[in-house]
Image (cartoon, rainbow, N blue to C red):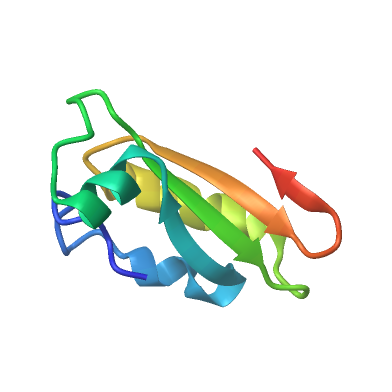
Length: 88
């Protein structure tokens, strides 16, 4: 996982690694892929987390809250649950 270029490095995105594979979706993904502006000042950071089978949801919620407190944009996380689909 590499954070979008407009998100400063001190935001500890690696804190999400124990919970599963993390990816960026939405307008920030399109911006990174096409090198064209796709976000607005109010755009959030859309993450998808392929949740590890042994991941603790309360611990994930705490990690996302800590991350959101340090991130300059709001975070919208979607969980992908193996065999069950996505939860937004």
